[in-house]
Amino acid sequence: MKVIAAEFVTSAAAGGSATGVPRDGLGQVAMAGRSNVGKSTLINALCRRPLARTSAAAGKTRLANVFRLTVEGGGPGRWDMYLVDLPGYGYARGGSGSAKELQAVGEAYMASGPDMVCLLVDSRHPGLEADIQAYRWLATLGIEPMVVATKIDKLTRADRTKNLRELERVFGTAALPVSAERGEGLDELWTRIARTVRVTKDRR
Picture: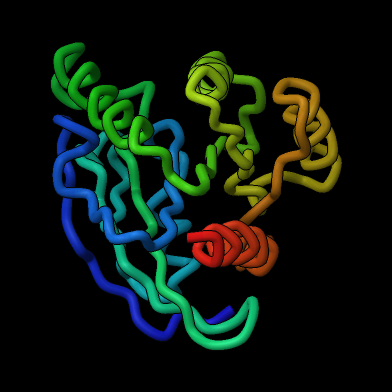
């Protein structure tokens, strides 16, 4: 898969169905997960360019940041889609009020029904309660997210096998291991995105 063009479109706040998110019929893939799990870093790796702002400090993404991509591959011709970087849950700079604000943004966006949700979890810490709660919450909305295990390169081979098994036990589905730094799993992630977004687009 090759990203021909990528651009920042808007930052959407809570209100309505996430005020500011484009509703033009293009497929949308949301990146959800705990703060500092690597959502912005993964988006940049998928796009092969510094598109999303990254930071070592958790809680920096405060709005739903929307990016429009033009992609080649996964079928004939080029196709367009949106990647949405959602605020991280489990941490917020500014206290509990900020945490509620970030949760409201995520809830407003999810209510609009994205075509695909990637739930990013840190492969080094499988089965965290915050991740489990997020997975269950998405299920109440009728969304079955794809679990993506980030930072897989930080694990030894033995820990990798053990943690991936634990993630599958916890979520009832196999997690896709990825490394934004080394590129592992990115082709498979793109294949799954293309399969979902292109099929959805063709049905519209």
